[in-house]
Length: 482
Image (cartoon, rainbow, N blue to C red; front, side):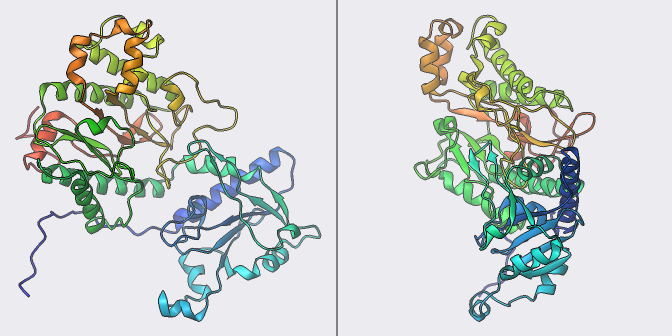
C-alpha cells in the first residue's frame, strides 16, 4: 500500500461536542414545574407520573422521549414522578444473544449514571415499580402523550404496556404542556443547534467549491453527506436531501423517490440545495443577470424579515413582509406591474411564495407547537401553508426561508384569473419560463431584543462567487469588497 494521504475534501476546525445529560435533566425539571403549575391552577392534586415510551428503531429515538431522557438505545420507557421530580428509566431485559450480535449488555447502573436519572429498572418491572413508588391507595395515575402534531397532522402515540387497566390514565394534559416546553430552547440546546448549523454551513460551502457542469445532482448530495459525517460526526441527515438544479428548483420537495436527485448539471444552471441548512448557488460559479434579479429578490425578503424579528412580532406579518419584498423586487424589474397593496390584497404573493415562511426547529426538523390550542390555520392562499401563526417569543428557534418560484401550476391560473392577470408583464415573465426557483434559509434564535442568525453561509452574490472560486470563508474583508 502507498502512504496515507490527506483527503482532498478539505478539513474542518469543528469538533463534535459531547451531549451533556444536564440538558435532559433541565428539560425534565422544566416539564415538572409546568405540570405542577397546571395542576395547581385547575385545583388538581400534585400526583402521578409522566410516562413515555421510547422508539423501537435502532437509528432514531422518539422525539419527546429523547427530549426528556436523551436515551439512544431502543426499547426503553421513562417515567417522572410529578410530586418528587424523580426520574425513572426502564430498560429492556435483553437475551444472551444480544451480546453475540450487538455487543455488551450494559448493567442497570450504567444507564443510571449515563442518563442522570434517579433509578433504573427493567421494562417487565414497570407495573410493580410504579405501584410501589406511588404509595397511594388508589390506582397510580399516568400522564400519557397523546395529541395532534399540527405540522404533520399525525397524533403522538401514547405509551402501551400490559395491564394498563391497572392504572388511571390522562391523555389530554401532557401533550400541550410538553410541546410548549420544547418550543423554548435552553442555552445547552441552543449550543447543539448552533453546532448543527456550523457543520451544515461548512458542508454547503464544500459543495459549492466542488460543483461543476456535467456532475449529477446526487453527487452534490454525496459531497454534503460525506462532509457532515467525516468532519462533523453527523451520521444521519435530518430529512431527505433536496439537490435541485435548473427547472427542478421550482419543485418544493424535489429529491423524493420519484425524483431522486439524478439530473445532470448544465453550465449556467442554478442549484437549490436543501440539506440541513438550505442554500442556493450557481453551477458554473457566476450569476447571470436573471439569476441575480431573482436571487436578490429573495435575499431582500430574507434580510427584511430577520431585521424585524423580535418578541411580540406576528409570524403572519413576517410572512406578508417577505411576500411584499418579493413583489416589490419583481415590480422593480417590470416582471409585475401595478399597485403592491392591490397585489397583496389579491394574494398574488402566494403565486411566487406558495409555502410558509418557516417552521419551528429543535429535536425535529419541524418541531411541534406551531398551532397551540385556540389558534386556527389561515385559509388564504400562501398563508394556509404557514407552519405556525404564533407571535415570536424569546427562546424560540425558527427557520426563515422565503422563496421565489416560477411554477406553471400556479402561474397559469393567475394569468387567466381576471383579478390577477393584469399584474403580469408577460413579455418579461416568459424569460423565466424554465427558471425554477430560489430559496434562502437561515435558522434564527429569538432573543430578548431581536434575534440571532445561527447560519453562517455566503449570502451576497459576490460572496458566493468568491467562495466558489476558492476563497476562504469567512472572506477576508480587506481583499474581498462588495
